[in-house]
Length: 401
Image (cartoon, rainbow, N blue to C red; front, side):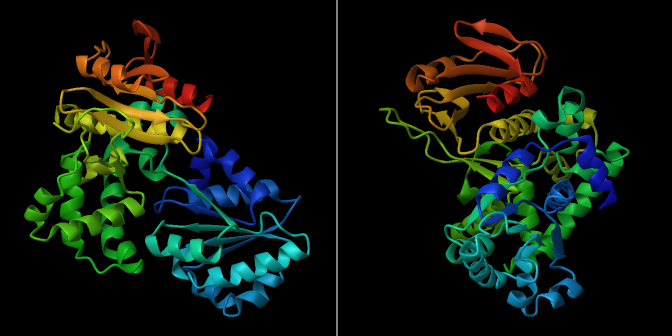
């Protein structure tokens, strides 16, 4: 906990403002994200800032002592009706949601309608289903992803790419220590965390799928090929992918389906969401090994996509565009309230060149803005209406939109 607090001080999280606003507007807020991403640190830091204006109570539901306090949840929580109650690892006791509903409704009648509960959890199908059924209209969801390029800035960008955005991995003393942390993280997820959430999936099978996804980072989903390699059926592969996506470990980027008369690619592109986990799954331990590895391009593209989506306003829709005729746009971001999307091409080099497919795609989609992300730091026009911009710079532009 102490190390995470230091990390939080060093690298402010973009989500702080949204979390503060959500607690001011909704009775309950669910902060969801993978383990070790910083949810507890963020919640406790917020509680410290509120101290004096409003006290907070923190309960870790993986602690037997804290779970015992909630043996009669209505009685215990009613004693803290004037406080912000933080419930960590909520997926361990999903039956609490029914109690929260009654307490929220009773509080509303007394004029205590906002910011009653902050629940933290590793996102899961069961968690979302349970809460959405019992707390409909009473809860707001926020996602805390690993640190991204817009949060860490240009000086740490190379380290972010290699090590990923989990705070303890990013700020480890060495690349070797960072890799060991990520290897342990993967093992713990497979052998402990996923079984705790309920699914009975062989750890080795899920590891093989996760590793295959890392090898094909940013490729079109070929479920049949994965099924053959794992000796399972297509429905089983789909269920495994659903689980990894629901745990915010994998992203399925859907193809653009705007009203265009073109033969569009229909399969999603699949990314392991944290670049550091990509490299750990593939045994890539340092920058030299990364630059020499075939996954380097897909890994950089994945980092860029995660960073840009995280920086964009809440409610932004993300897609890619590809046609059978060769038109292709790496990322389309449709911001709330805007009719046309932003078209983004992602390059890693210092002298970016626009592919013909990007021009063809823009002719079809007619985007509001056209940007090329590249590995440099300066911003400059690369063609008529198209700017080359750094990843950190485009994150800032999206955050201000």
